[in-house]
Length: 359
Image 1 (cartoon, rainbow, N blue to C red):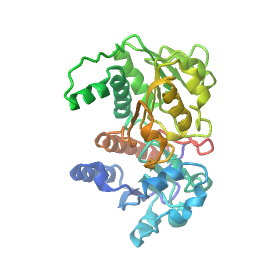
Image 2 (image 1 turned 45 degrees about the vertical axis):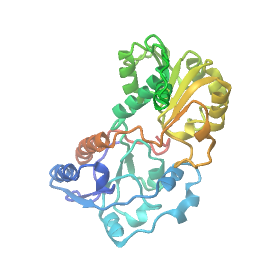
Image 3 (image 1 turned 180 degrees about the vertical axis):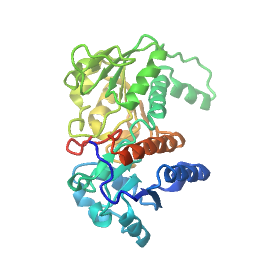
């Protein structure tokens, strides 16, 4: 999709709506704002935080978001004034029916790769464009995912436990080189995984929506279309999943998928919690079908204290923290500045979401 600003071409109000402290460096945050303002004489900045609770954000990315309207925080007068001015925003959250409070809004740059919570604000119905920050944290997340694989192969958890118990007994890990790694999805994160996996001399297989017979991808030995992903799973010693949240991916890793993996393999999800049938995953761990698994995301976040995942055997669980915020926001602003230049010039935007498909 192309086309530049369709409001007042002499003035573009750009809203920065995430909390400045998230950047981690106030001076650098201020420098980012100056760089945005200097990009074009038409740009004016609006800096005002709008953030919803994590639980609400997670729930708004799933079906049934309409039922959550009464949980959205009321807007302050400052927030209302900011939304009323904005033509473009960088945001992690938006109010329901955002066009009521932001009638000029034409484009939203998401802070993250996931955009379900933003889409629930009615962007598609209003014709408001949406771009993701896909790739902004791909390197950090790929490092995290491979670290989980290494942690399991080298028995770091058992070695750390022995140290805590002051117990000296060798525990030898396996060699990763020569193993087969499967990548469920080949977006920015798993492309970064593939590049690093090659340094470990892994055989790399991957699924891609657009894969056709004979298709190739950098650092990947063999590509599979989504319909053949069970065949890929059956060849893998470890699988890393990083796919968007769509109707097609919801519950994709179910009992049949875990059964398709060979016994004693490893599964890691750093994408979206909706991908995994969590009861099926727990059963696969209990039965030994999987040697271990790592989840950085869950179907409900924060994960309730009584959720079965907490006590699942051989599960490495982290609270959606595979990213590296210090890298994320610098990369996000680099992406946004380049996209804002494209927007002002009427060029195609990077990472634009097809709001009919949802990704």
